[in-house]
Length: 348
Image (cartoon, rainbow, N blue to C red; front, side, top):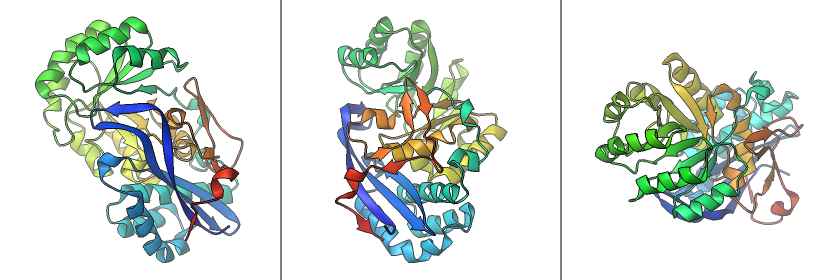
């Protein structure tokens, strides 16, 4: 089969609510590169709050493919740089292309993706499981039904104080608090004693809006809780900008444009003394498999995206009780299931 794109609607296991809004499904786009008898699989879930549609990505990749395809196998940086120029700011499309290229090159080299990059998979951190905003009862039920050892709790509603206290009564597991920019500076400072009181909070992620950067320094001054930047730190050039005001960054492959820039961000963050988390969107096992192969390079991981859907089109790395179980395959190990190849294919 030649190279192709496959648009697909992922169905959420539960309604997923964060400060940005809520959704029951997520549009994703898969790409499979074929060259010299090897294939490479990439993905980017097109979450709506970034304003990039699957249709846009399909169109841009189709238009650029004749220029990109000859660069497959000619080095990660040259391929990524050309793709970056052609995708014109579309980090979702760029991520898909880069993941597929890494998968393809690893297979050609007869290695797993992690092995091809010199990553020791045995050092992969435990993943958290994300609990979207809902009633305390509904959130507690999701927690009780999960065997993950740590939870990422989404906040950013009007009753966060009572909500987080109620959740702590239901679980003694560690919490990672993610606000997705849903707090004001005043409310964030008000919530710090609450988070200290409930205990077991590992860090606070993106308390203020994306464009608000320096004000996070005021939060950092009055808490020992590590402060992580997510939406505020999308690309490599953002790492140095946020470093004075945060303790760590959350890198997402689909946010920064793939593995190639993520590795550069990891290196720069280490040089600046920042902690690093590798996060995901609600996505299939294609994206999760790729990120799992570099997860050992960071301090924290949140790679539960495929666990949160009911119709995963890809067989790949599985996250069980927070532990990544890798396939004994070259590349990242993700393969599109046969039944999902019957319709919707867009040949490149």
